[in-house]
Image (cartoon, rainbow, N blue to C red; front, side, top):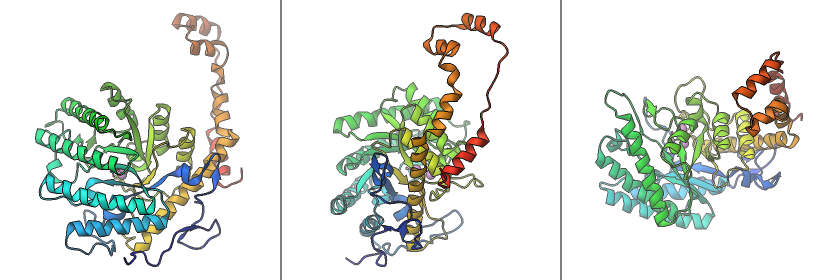
Length: 440
Ligand code: XLS
Ligand code: NI
Ligand code: NI
């Protein structure tokens, strides 16, 4: 079969000085950092929807992307050609994983039966290509937001038939994820949220969302799907108020419905910033709650209020993200999935490589800096010293639980001339800069 990316061969690591745009400058998959290779730390994944199915459409303009595989007028044939091209791309890029929604890889049919048949046909091709290339499935998911039937949501729709349809779609998506050896399964809220409380019963919709997730947990057990379930928080878009607003909201929701032991988080950088948090904040909060599962690696634009899903190139952000991931003991079954799309003006085929290489290098650089920071423990030591007052005296009694408000009052009456210590934020930022620039 003729190659689509015929001018590109396997992307190699050439190192810092390289001027070759089709080479890695920092990502050397076999380089050992700490206990693991870079490839094992970073577990990169390509997002099928943006990279292969996305066409560069925006609300003001039509498709711009040059995608030579999109030529057949038969949707199933087109999906097959796209899948073959996808595996050529991923092999040449050297990523170990990919992720998909059911409807990215196979076209929606006229009926649910036909959609399922289309999916089966494409899944068997995917299985073959996965065997041939060794590329694995990081996670699968169901698209419960594009079709007009999901106008009012899926499991939180006011229409019970839509709830049922969404259930059928998740059942099938779980089956194919299992069949392809998927290591995780993602629930992103899609249209699970609301536009106005004038027509919405929020409490009822949240109960239904929990009912739906409970059914998914039960079905996974029934079919023996042992991958990790992930919820991907997002505060807004497409609905004004998404129910899975941020990590804190999702943790509270899961606890309320006794679902917390079944789910971890898939944290997306751009969703964090839309929620008014940093990416690091969301990773950190998930980590300290034992819920850091996987990452949608992208970045937003601070001047724009929507989910721009850009390739992650900001090395400060990737460094602090890798800091959290290393402190988490790694991503375990998760990975760094490039849920990122090229800008509409970056329509050439080679841009697909440039974008992913940029993201992979940014995370590889971040990994090395974060590893160094953890090796010297400079930040960790600072933080430990900062909380040192809890190691002795009244602080240690607070931790042991041997004092109450009465004892605290007695202590405070004798120690009411309080001396605080500086937080030294600017000093720490300067120290971080030294690590970023390789001076430490
Ligand atoms: C959309 C989400 C979506 C999920 C998968 O904003 O990021 O792409 O990752 O459904
Ligand atoms: Ni995402
Ligand atoms: Ni996004």
